[in-house]
Image (cartoon, rainbow, N blue to C red; front, top):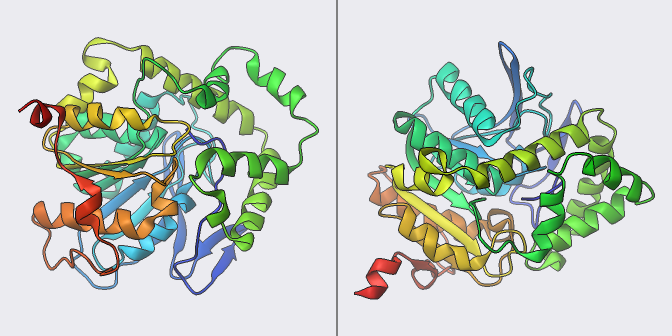
Length: 346
């Protein structure tokens, strides 16, 4: 549950550029898709050749489509990638109905996919985006070919202490208190705090990426709906955690039919590493990638490892002409664990 725009760890492109204020990696494009009551910015990575299967990337709380730039660049020869800025985040304005619940955000993703006609897609989600993507895959299996979840926000009985401040944003009136308490914090200090919270090793963030994140933080803090989007989205996660029955996220995880890759970081301070086994048992036929040194955003810290693991998933799911391991220096066979708790009992 990241709480601001995050800096990238390393650039996978030669340079970045700004279009209308938005930072784009070399080769990326940005467009705005408009539907009644919904407007979303979409970061596009044109495929290297025609005929590649479509993929959609969904960021976490307070993040943006830019969180996926490194991984999208590495997969440009395998999928036709697009990453959305969820309503109220990145360069997308708030939704007209101000619905930031997990269901509301999932509905926005479904509307986007239905309108674009790109489904079924290889769907990726991080943190809040993981919960949203799970709901999409459970409700509309016809829209999802495979599901890749990086530290998905799923209900935990024992929430990590470092995740409590994010959960407190859901308490009515707490946003105003936090605004007053943090009024004196500079954008640089806020960005550094988020980096230390979300990365397993903050020193991996380059000075250039950190400076860009500070600039983006300043822009976001100036938006009139910044705190509303953050608090209502936080409340949406907490509400989703309390739902039971068919609407519970764990129950919906069990309904997912798409082949699933789960990625967890051993240094994640927001989603507990201990949830990995439970998730692997919930998503049928899933494969599990555990990265002991990664934090909450493994696709940004270790994009090359996540890339290789996804290529394996894609190949097993029937992807054509897939280079399973384009990085011979990365031994994913050691990191990918496809066993579930039931296997261990056997």
